[in-house]
Amino acid sequence: MRSASILFVLFAAVLWGTTGTAQSFAPEGTHPVAFGAFRLCIGGGALLLFSMLQRNFSLSGWPLQSLIAAALCMAFYQPFFFSAVLMTGVAVGTVTAIGSAPVIAGLLEWMLYKRIPDRKWWIATMTAITGCILLFANPEAITVDPIGMLLALGAGTAFATYTIVSKELLNTHPPDTVTAVVFTLAALILSPALFFFDLSWIATPEGIGTGLYIGIIATAFAYLLFARGLTGIKSSTAVTLSLAEPMTAALLGVILVGETLSLLSWTGVLLLMMSIVILSFKRKTEARI
Image (tube, rainbow, N blue to C red):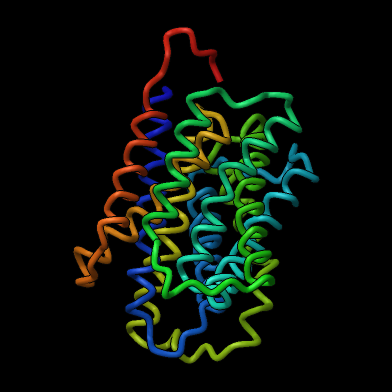
């Protein structure tokens, strides 16, 4: 059960890591916030349809506060993250947002459930964060913008909180239904943003193609896998495993786009892989989730 959960989360992170490469094929001038909102609308609609076809969709028995919190976190993650990247650059924005999420998740678990993450989690998380920093190490491209940094921390907090609250929702509803309802609400919350940007790119083959891929595959399918993985591992562990996302993005950049990585960046990739291996081993005495 635990091994399958780890694989589900890792596969989800790999799919998230393809979004940057896919977005590079979108028409020039596509605003990232509009792209994120469109992604959420497509993903939410696909998840809702999938849940209804399975005939397990239900609007009853939901803990309202947790449901709204999860939807708000997923809705606000999009503009927080993309705006942070615009203001601070890809390196600082990504490292701050994605790198802060595991630590925030661990702290939230400790504060909410009085459950302190074990030594293995701390070692794996610190290894992963160090790897993430080295992966994006490029002193010439660093721009430290205070507001951008706060937005990046907001994105990390949103993702960590979404993960923890979603795990609570999984106690009462199946993973597919939780993901469908949360993303549908998140899409409704963020959909007004679409009226503030030029959406002519959606009508182009490149626009609709990249939008459908990111919405259905890299969002709907990926978060379905993530939710199923959450049923068998701790929230803090799942967030740390999600750091496979920037590693995937970097490797795709080398393989598909022709980018090159420095020795420091390759060291970062190695450390990220090591963190995944550390988390994958389970002690015989380890308690059930």
